[in-house]
Image 1 (cartoon, rainbow, N blue to C red):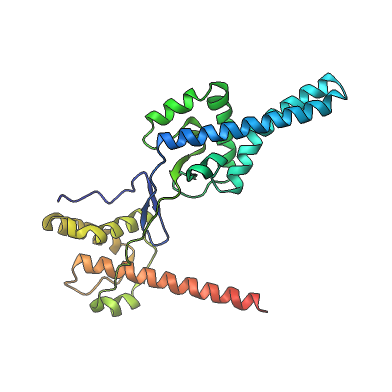
Image 2: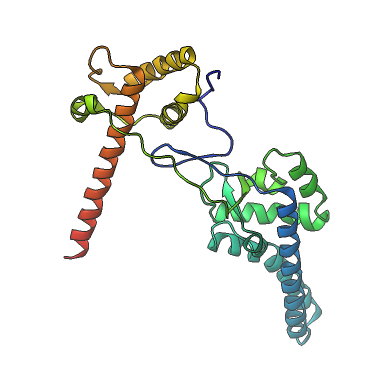
Amino acid sequence: MPAPEFATLTTDDLVTGEAVALDLPPASLGARITSGLIDVVATSALLVALVLGLTIAALQADEALAAVAMLAAIIVSVVVFPTAIETLTRGRSLGKLAMGLRAVRDDAGPISFHHAFVRALVGVVEIYAFLGSPAFFCALLSPRGKRLGDYAAGTYVVRDRVRLTLAPPVPMPPALAAWAAGADMTALPTGLAMAVRQYLGRSHQIEPHARADLGERLATAVGRHVSPPPPSGTPPEAYLAAVVAERRDRDARRLAREADLRRRLASR
């Protein structure tokens, strides 16, 4: 098997604290259409209720107030309501809740108010003004099913009910444990850490020559962040495993110390 390219992240990879890539598959077009229809029905029902309530109340005053009430009902229904729902649920609308979907940032992180607001604002044009046609064709052509609002906000929609599993942690090579414990290691750049983890997890699938060449290149890149170098004659794969395992253990100890400090401060 030829050597895969590990230097860059794929478009659907989420990188965890240990630089483990989780594949978050984008939602299918059918699921998004169904979710969108549910949202449109819910928004329409809210709009009708608001229009009736506000119009009846405003008619007792004057026509100008009734027009303002109508505009307010539309804004609340198509902008404020979907923005609030997606912000409070971290990317879920009523339709997405029903279909097991969630809107996430392009880096797979949770969306914020800004993302939800942009999605809702663009949705007024592409969904309601043009009856969803721009959203449909954009999602149809997009590799990740992104509508115009997703492109504007930097988001996409994933299947939230997909079961994700982490690969087992990389073990520390016993022969390098002492060296790793005393080595000075700075945090690896995310892309490099990701490449190393992918290489270690898939090295058995790579043909020997390509495996050795890729291991040497990754070891050279990692060596810029580690001092002193490993003992002479250390295989690149063992060296990379030692660095990843030691960094994981140090991060775990640091998090444990921080948690202990918070507990002690909270108990005073």
